[in-house]
Structures are given as structure tokens and as C-alpha cells.
Length: 336
Image (cartoon, rainbow, N blue to C red; front, top):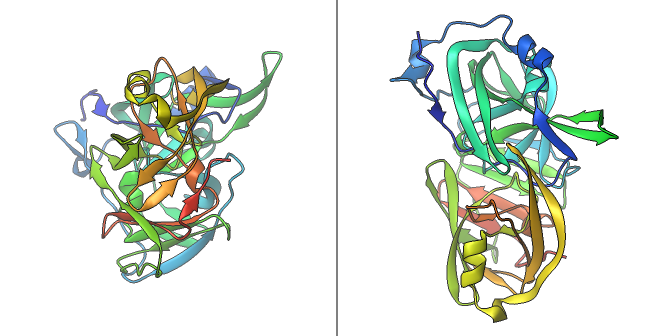
């Protein structure tokens, strides 16, 4: 029996995608907990989850999946246990597969008895259940056999006069799963994502690039802003440009800002809502890539620096996990 011990997860979800973020309803949580299953001891060690990937694809496989950006971030069709779902490519999520409570309940995924986690992200903290799935596919390509998924117990909703008009499904493919591929190419101009499994990526001539490291479940990059080095994690599941803590922003020289604060907006995250202010940086240098200008945002509650999807939304980018580089096929990426 697995003890009720919190598993350390860092789950950062997208920004600004809904009008309301609330705890999942009692009815939804009850549906999730109706038929719990016993934990498989092979999935845990000393109360900590041990990720296992039961691959259904062969080395050298390459497959293409259509992509949409209706939420301002890359999403692709998938299926879990044979049922169709839409999933977001989220390098800022430290869990391989993370589902919202309503989607997991509709899929009838059995939760694992006695296994819970804590998620931390924009807006605060949230409880995460663990559940068992039998298979995962992307488009028509089955990729994984049995495994463990996370379920966050918040709900993203569009509301009118306090009444839920629409519940927005937010299911995520996180960094631990994405980095199992040799490379993942997000081709925004062609609206597709290309996955390569155990097949080296050949960058095109003249592509810009910047290096990254993976530490504590995040992809870290170094930017130069106003002559200063800023360390951020790359989060394709966030619709922002550069998200800066107030402390970091104050340390930048005044000349680094093209425009300080243009407007206010709400940031939606795993734990709720934050108010943020939005401005424009003159430029940021990332490897041999210049981002000019670059939108930034900041909030009183923010403590991490992250680089979101916004600067790359018009580009073809390849996350080369073997070389630990991101390749951008257009040198100019704007935030306009």
C-alpha cells in the first residue's frame, strides 16, 4: 500500500485562457473516486512515483500530428483508452500526462488508492490525484501502453452572470514525456507537430538556436536583457512572452524597456487567478536568436521567470532533446 505522501510536482499551466478557475465540483471528484485501484509497487519507490514508459512505436519512427492554437498555445488530437481528447504540448508541466478533473471523469480513469500529489503554479496550489490509463495515442498513432496520469482538481470555465456556460478541457503532455522523443517540431505555419523517436534531428542551414538544460523537471534557458543575464524556463503551455517576477524587473536597466506597463489583465493558472501588468522589452537575446520587441508581464504573486509560447507562435521550432538545443527556422520572432 502506498502511503498518503505528497509527491513533489511543479505544474505550470497556461496563462489567460478562461474567465474562471475553480475547484472541480463534488460530483466530478466523486466520479473520479468511485472505483479506485491498488497501486502497482513497480510504479513507486519510497512513496515517490517512478515514471515508466511502455512504448508502442519502433526506434526511428517519425509521425506528424495536426495542431491547433485556439487557446493561443499548441494543442494536438490524442486518444486515451481509445477516447478522443485534445492535449496541450506543455514543456512547463513536470508531469508526463496531466488531465483536468472533468476530462478524467468522462474517460472513467480509475484513480490509484492512497496516491496523491501537490501541484504549484500560477494562482496557487492544487491537489492532484493519480490515475491508471491503458493506452495513449497521438492522432492515429498509438505510442504508449499502461501508465500513470495526473488529474488536477480544478476546472477552467467560461461563465456568464456567475453561471458556467462552457467548461474548457485542459489536458497536458508534459516535459517528462516529451523529452523521451529525440525531437519535437512545432510547426506553426503548417499547423502540425512532428515527433521523432530515437532518430537524430538534422537542423536546416541557417537556423537560429539556443541551448537549454533540464533541471528539476524544467527546461532552463539564459536570456540577455538590457545587458543582464536572465534565467528562465521554457513553457510552451503558457501564452505569455516573458513572465518576470517584480524583483527581476526592478533589476533591469530603464533602457531595457520600450514601454513599461500598457495594460492589466488576468492570468489563469493551476491554482486560480492572478492580476498582472503587461509591457514591452526592447529586445532579448537567446543564443543567436534576437527577440525584438518582446512582450513581458509581471504580477505581485509571481516568483519564477518563464519564457512562454508567444515569441514563437509564427515560427517552426524544433526542441532537439539529444543536443539540448531549440532550433528556430526564422531568425526574427516578434511579439506584435
